[in-house]
Image 1: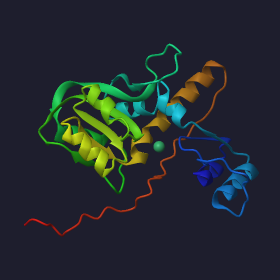
Image 2 (image 1 turned 90 degrees about the vertical axis):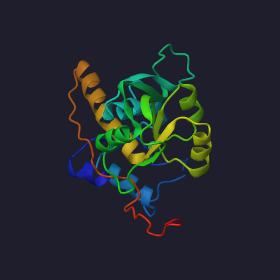
Image 3 (image 1 turned 90 degrees about the horizontal axis):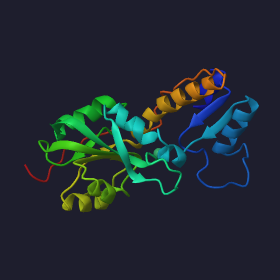
Length: 232
Ligand SMILES: [Zn+2]
């Protein structure tokens, strides 16, 4: 992505995931991340990361995920703790479908709405189960099963679901699960962030040109369906 920014003569990269997830004591050019910092500095490219603040913001990561699925967010899945008066802020979103649709058709909506990845999409639940209420949470969302159930969601769309939390949630009966690639669930936010930057800066008299990177940063490069079945 740095190479793409440098090639395009960009002055600023805005990303969702931070370059450094923990504090560092140095950025030696002999390390991969340090060398990246050097390249950005030499080429005059600034880096701004909007991670969990973009997750909680309104509009934020899950609003764009909902929009990519053709859904209108009604409320946050986990409202923000900060008492700043905006009840729309928080993690994840609850949405409602205008007309109920079977889970299989809903998954097709996810398939066509999000960018393709090698891992694809996993679904847990009866294919004909009617879906009315939808919970979405961009990025790793297996900490919010209880919130999705409490919100009366028929399906929960998120990423990075693990065996135990997923099966334990399904044992409680609801919601059905749609597990997408982490990158695919967050990528729609880039267009929303670019739009916000352009319009808010334009309101202050500054015109900026944005470019939305389409580089797939999902780490998985192939999905190989197994052949060996334990039942004929
Ligand atoms: Zn993420």
